Length: 281
Image (tube, rainbow, N blue to C red; front, side, top):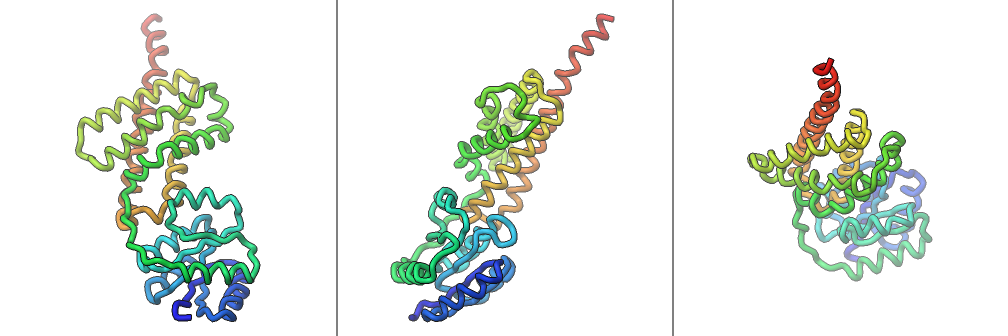
């Protein structure tokens, strides 16, 4: 078998023994590693025909990091994710086919071998994917960001107690997320900065009227930040990783500015009744 070099990545010791034994018996040359760092070292020093990576290597979603590195370094390598979660199919769709396929653990030895042999027979040369910047990703996943933020808000004991419709609860996100993306693309635009300032102030005033406390504004911001980072982690294969740290810093900075402006408007509106009382007195 000419194309038989396999990189297998898994932090489960028993599988690191079993699966390479099965593949070796069927003519594959297998290199086995247990961590993301070891996998990245292999990817940058040796050529492979097929990668099999556990989805969660130490941390949830680490397998995407390994696949991302392989796709960029060795674009013709076949990439297979191993997962113990049958619902992974939805996550596979979310990364838009950048992973070639996946296997559910545990899997029978015969199925594993035939599955890999079929992938090897039907492999097609592919071009390196054109990576996108974070701002583009934010725009393209806006609906998902809204839905996931709403879900997390409703699971937050404090925030979920505030009586709001779903649209009011997350309606501001469309303007905020697209605004942040626009400012990341055009940081020198004073017009965009003015729009963002007004949107943040309106959000702070609206949350005060709804019965928020200042701590809930901070929780909203933390929830959105966590959702964005999840979106990024799930789509590492699509992103321009050479600029990702810079983009994430810019995003975090814009989100912090939004929170600061929202808190200023919130506190200013909250102080008005007290100021009127003092004047009346």
